Amino acid sequence: MIYLTIDIGTSSTKVCLFRPDGSLWLSRSASYPVNRPQPGWAEQDPRAWWQAASALCRALLAEAGNPPVRAVSLSGQAPLCVPIDRHGRPLRPAILWLDRRAAPQASWLKERLGEDEAVRLSGNLLDAYFGGVKWLWFRREEPELYTRTWKIAQAQTYLAWHLTGQAVTDPSHAGMCSPCFNLQERRWDERICELMNLDLDRLPEIHPSTEIIGEITRQAAVETGLEVGTPVVCGGGDFACACLGAGALTPGQGALMLGTAGNLLVPALERTDPRLINTLHLTGERLSMGGVLAGEVITWVRGLFGNPPLEVLEAEAARVPPGAEGLLFLPYLMGERTPVWDARARGVYFGISSLHNRANFYRAALEGVAFAFREIAAIFAALGRPLHEVIILDGGARSPLWRQIFADVLGLPVRWRPNSPGTSHGAAFLAALAMADAPGWGALQRWLEPTLDTLPRPEAQPIYAGRFAAYRQLYGRLKDLF
Image (cartoon, rainbow, N blue to C red):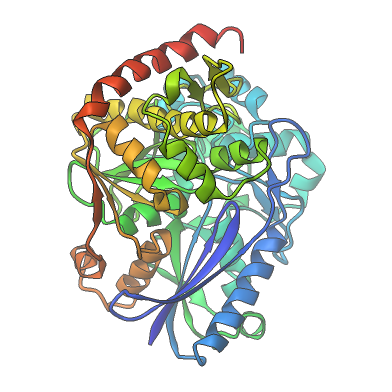
């Protein structure tokens, strides 16, 4: 018996097969583009997710010799706006988490609801990033499509419908849909939805992440190669599954995702801070995170220089000393989430001289993302949960240069599991829990491989302390100009 996981990411869909002991057996992925029809907009065709997921399932199961699948578990990017009709057909392209078009709707909510009340109910500020604010844009700007909408889905919801006919979500996803989700009472908030003129019956039902939400239908079996009746587990947000898959379960640990988005996640905080993103974990505890662009920044910088091989850029940047010889970078290419929450913020290279070349620009970008996370780590410390180590995962973690920069900038050990599939690992463990194959959350430790550790270098600490001080001033001085 094996567990099959499907993760709908921003740049690709990934399907994995896991053995009963949690070890990865096989994995495949398929990529698709992010469409940007206007400045600040980011969309995707949801049909590409299902086409990728179903084709990958067929190919992977055939490659494995069609073994029996114990359960399927789901994860996906969030927060999104994916309106679907009663047949599961998307009525428009998905509005992605990257998208900033709903800034006017965030301003309207600040006037009508008030930011303090939003924080009290949802734990989060009113910003175009959050799902509920995107839904308000859709409700107001495309009312004819809204009237045809059966459910406003997330990527996980869309996938669940195609596999089981059930359009559901889990608390980790729902918590990203502020201000519509009441974090204290763990439900959709009727009063807020009424204010926004959103019908509650258009929102997906919320189910626990470890719940079996249905079985593979006949149509899904034809398209995926899975057996009819195979259990499907609700799963969770990719960020929450990543935190679980990293093994960040004890105080002092943080999980650092370096995919298209970058997230620093810390579970089980006793109190929240609205400068962070606050939702619920797969375990039922609170989960707080700071989020910035990460892999998207690297993709953009490479594109500036004609997309040279990544290993070439890495080698060149490794020869540049810490501090990038005076070059600083603000990684606010799509506005910014934590901690500044400014849709108007933009990326900045500061301190450019004629001596700088692409190696400096690349290293400064790596350092800029690390500085953004150092700001976030300081918030966790102020909440009484200082970090003692971070567990790094996703594609950016494969860079030894970036791991060393993070260790030096954060002043913390950076631990990496080279063979860990991260998000998919967490989703597979949810399947084991749902099927009662794992006795509890503590059993996750048996699934984790040893870490490869990168330690901070004492000689780099004063350099980065000085550069970080300049970094923190830069946004404040430019804010009004943005």
